[in-house]
Image (tube, rainbow, N blue to C red; front, side, top):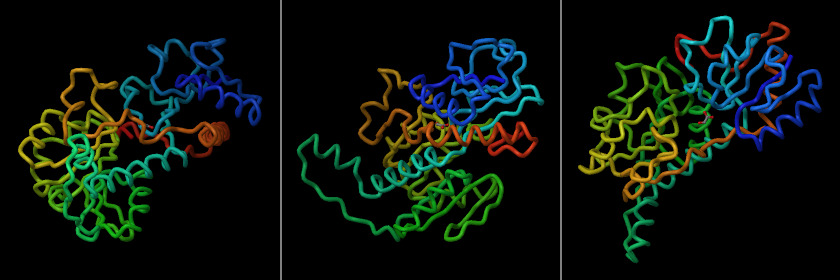
Length: 308
Ligand code: GLV
């Protein structure tokens, strides 16, 4: 009954120590030490090993170390092996901080001021009250809802868009493709927190930007593949989009010769918005393994048809 972990090895040691203390019946191995491969029942991974289904013949559950599960090919996973995404409080807290940080930075024109400082320019930009800056969040799962909840204190008009209709107090909710354009037309700052699926790949494209108010801004905390990068460059060039803050890129690390590095309207961070913290996540994983062992529902179970 072994757990095999394949993610950041430094944090792996903390996971391992927590399991040694709280679940000595579950040996916790850190990749590439797989021990007796036939004993591995649970795989906890960011990027799974190649051919892990052949490598681990008695695998029972696959857990993503992150909130996203797009690194797993759902078509290859047999239906008897559940895939579970990470829902843990410290990861969500990191994402909420990043969203608030990026929205305030955009709202208060920080990207312009960083450029002005480099050019030794002292130039004020007229302040827009929060009550007139409309924020739209795409994706209303645990992360989107937590971010919206925290944003309420600032007084921004808040909107949300998701695949199925949601009800959130203080947030105007839109759903489905039929309401997508209405949602976009009311977004001064658009935040993407969607899971990456075949339906959401490339959703941040020229049509989406064109449906937003002129000069709107983008914040992408989902996945790089949500964004059509050349469409963003065009939209920035013509002023349809005024700025973008991107924590995720289609190729990570961003290649050295990529146009985004030096673009004055783009701020990039290296996929750090949220990080799974072993101190909290190990307990979530252990609870989920115990639920699986006793036949109770697992939190974060991925629906293979929906892709998240
Ligand atoms: C990070 O991107 C995650 O999926 O947790």
